[in-house]
Length: 226
Image (cartoon, rainbow, N blue to C red):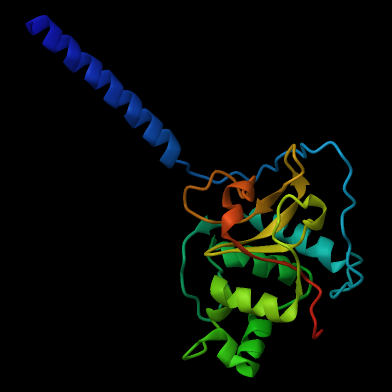
């Protein structure tokens, strides 16, 4: 009986140790990967290109947003929500909304300024008691209002894969990201985003698992060009 008890204790110890190792591997990522996933979709889908080039760099806005978002994640921002005087993170930290803001900035658009102006002009749409341009453009709920009111709204059915193009903006209930130009084997695009401290990669096969949380899909064809 004593030997059986010792054996059970040993087995229990081994199981606990194995569980501890699995937990450590799952939650101890020191650095989020910037490695791009391969394009697993075999069929050709023509990449959408916009007719505008805001910053005059020879790259259309749609492509510029995509490339700028990819350049931003190469800086390997660490995830943390902080408040910044002036609004823009300058210390290597960031959140999901910064991926979008930096993508647009690289294309020549100041999202902070655009959102602040829209809030002043349509404050009732935003349900904000006191506007604060330092943080308003970094809140998902505000960006949902801004993109809905000012840009081209697209469908949210992920099975219509050709409607999803690299450089589009996708908004979830509490998250936001940029649509990648690379796709999984079924043609569903990956998402460039920054959602947590333990995120394995900045570009992930994210849409399928979060399809029921999508609240908006937009393309940067701003209605009132500035």
